[in-house]
Image (cartoon, rainbow, N blue to C red; front, side, top):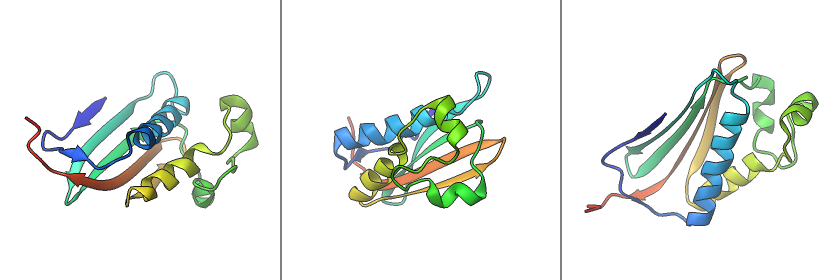
Length: 129
């Protein structure tokens, strides 16, 4: 599902890096969500920032692994690396690219219920007509 705030203006972003942020977060959500699960992407205004959330009903992330999520070359579980494939760089790049745009990223997750990756970057609110 895609939900976009109609008040959303232009986003100050490097388009290549912004696409990579979205690609990595959305592909992870899809990769770790079962076939009958759901992925929701929401973009909304939050003050002078745009907040983008990617929510899934996937496998979730254990609390004790949260601090490893954005570290380069860290895989949370060797079993998952084999089953889902990955280099351990995707989320590290996401964090770096978000911070390069003056933003921040955070995650909420429950094992067996899913995850929410939420990032915020500055936005210009203009008339887009």
